[in-house]
Image (spheres, chains in turn red, green):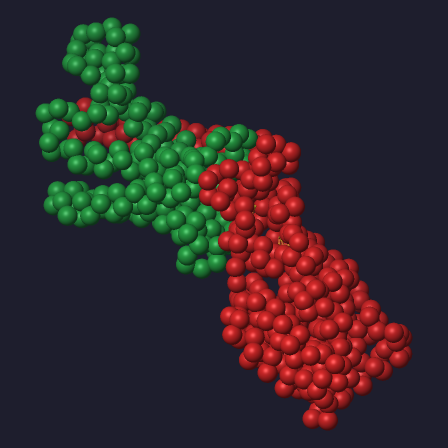
Length: 374
Length: 219
Ligand code: SF4
Ligand code: SF4
């Protein structure tokens, strides 16, 4: 992960840029709290970070909307400038770099060669695999070819956003381009998924920071997401939870309950099934998060969130209908059809049983039979 | 598709169909089968017998004073857990949303904490009921697979529901998926086991009451 020994350490770079030890420690304290570490860990973190060398980062974009990069550039702690200049060495990013075309390709090739086996590959967007991957081509290469090539020399891969992590919108039914998640395309490589549509900026930068500080892939959950940010559901940390527990729910977006800030469960909130840091880290420098603004969580950090019916239908909704939900008419028709079938089977079995009984009654030994038709 | 999607989608649809087919099948079956002929002279009018039938639904649902000492434990346990189950099933907000999603109506919920208390009490009573069945020599001999499996399936729904609300045993959606899946299983088993008693119990009591009255006996 570390850059060549000739490269200055992060501490040397900070000294060179005139960053005081005090402000660096303050920064590390903020980082430690973001990573849910005790304040005491800030010193150890500062020491580790100072001694580390900035990893080379190569950033690739596939089927995406650039929302993840937009989010990344809005990180307050650490800020994007701080991140790029002091913590990582962003050697290639088609959107942010000044170079374009052949120059950009060359910059990437150089960075890969100089840091082979050590660079961090950051990817946003899903990769189309249908029809030989023709749905994403740049510089005469398919996305799948580029990803495979860049993944070879990467120490680890960070999939930023739900598209890169799980396929996201491009992967939504019917997935015409055969879009796939990064983790499915780079066998054997350590992948860190930073899901969200987009992910919280501080969660993206925090994940990089955690990687640089510890020099290893952080603890991940079953969806390969850093547990420090994705270990808790939105619901478990939601400030509206007391309303949920009391059974106080907003029924519409402008009723008394909505105005009183009651729980948004019945309006389709996916907080209980969504693991992300929105309720704690929040957005826009911890100003707010969707639920605080009165909108239910869409579940954007979870796999297949586009394919789970309406964003506004509650979690425990029956889902076998065409539109994802079951309408009352549909349920009624199915129940009536099933009931009629039941009546037919029931009547049929009675006819058979009666025939059997009549047959038995005709035999001499059943003359004492006491069952007669009423 | 994850477990929750399967449980509230395909599995629920299958369970829904099996439930309605099964319930109607069995009800029609019982209704149309031959009945024992009433050989005695009718002592009371049909109208009086109908009233007797209605009375029978109530009187047969209450412990008989002569046997009360012997039956009170079982009946108290039975009534208590049935009440607990009804409260938990009908008044927990997510359940109302679930039933409301295809029934088209929603009704007021009870606070989750109250529901949790009822669920824990109901589960405790459930364990007591099973211990009684296992510890009672006569009851044990009378019990068959249906008794134990029906107990198990309802207890499974209760336990997974409690686990989901308490967020224990794994990620919420997995436990929620198991909870809904166990409910699907319950729906499938419903018409074919003793759970079907919920459909039989009042009609059979009414018929008994009707026949008794018609024969001149108290219902
Ligand atoms: S608003 Fe959503 S996340 Fe918050 S308590 Fe209600 S259901 Fe949970
Ligand atoms: S609240 Fe939910 S939908 Fe909104 S950003 Fe957070 S995880 Fe995504």
